[in-house]
Image (tube, rainbow, N blue to C red; front, side, top):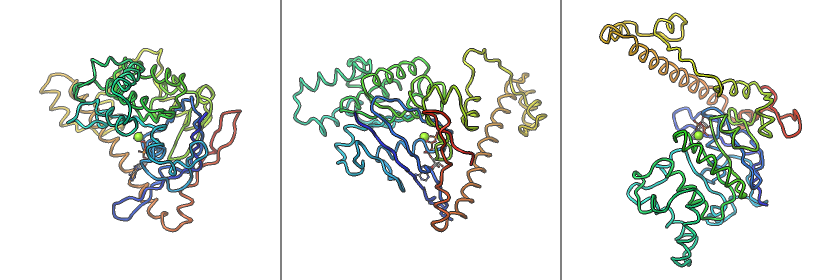
Length: 353
Ligand SMILES: Nc1ncnc2c1ncn2[C@@H]1O[C@H](COP(=O)(O)OP(=O)(O)OP(=O)(O)O)[C@@H](O)[C@H]1O
Ligand SMILES: [Mg+2]
């Protein structure tokens, strides 16, 4: 049985803007991915999920720490050998294709690199097997250009490409967030089936309910550090870290009927949530004779406010990092994660930072 071992992996990005601030995208992250296990990686935007996936896929170099596959540093594997066992699928499947070529060129590239001596008949049988595993009908997808395929078909083709290789580890980074509900379920069921066949999956998601559905173990990442991890039923059933609890309360309750309470400009302004441009709202109301458009304006303003707030927080963080980011002691402090303590068997929780 193969294992990918991630040990004390840190990644520090230096901003290219003036001032050269530092971002600690990963702070001494350690965990194992044994073959056949699905691990869900959860955290809000910017918590370091994709950075971790990219480090595992050798797309970026860690600043420190090590990743080994069966005891050997992944950097030491020839590229061809490594990608035979470790593959990635990303959020936007379309961007993985070259739009001027037919989508199945991704298979030809695999053939050229890994199976140049395989006969046509043998290759066709292999390809059919991979497409069958992801429930795609060859006639529906072969010979088509990427824009002629649905997002779900594009995503499945990429998973099929990974299956053509002797892949043991799959990094799946937000692969279903762009798909409609029924395609999501199909892809999730496919992942569960592949897991049963021995594939290990690092499943990156914002969506905690999906994580709960597919994974054996869960890792919660915050500001590049693990704040809670363990067996999924333990982390979800008895969350200990405030951040995990916060994320869990944000999950919509599936059985509860959703009550629509429109956020009108008046309520919003009274509660001090947003400053509605009331002149504009009044204009819109009188022009349409209804509050619906005004409500939409209020929502748009709210979204603007939120993204502005996010930008301000990011700017402040950059300022802090650029002040503190001088000298190796400051960098070491920046990378120091909170200490993980065993709460119960197979359930670690970080001390407050
Ligand atoms: N190439 C880069 N150069 C500089 N900073 C980067 C780079 N890539 C990522 N970062 C920063 O590292 C942090 C982690 O980014 P990352 O993409 O890993 O987050 P994420 O958890 O995948 O977020 P999302 O859920 O939005 O995809 C962010 O602060 C991001 O701005
Ligand atoms: Mg990401």
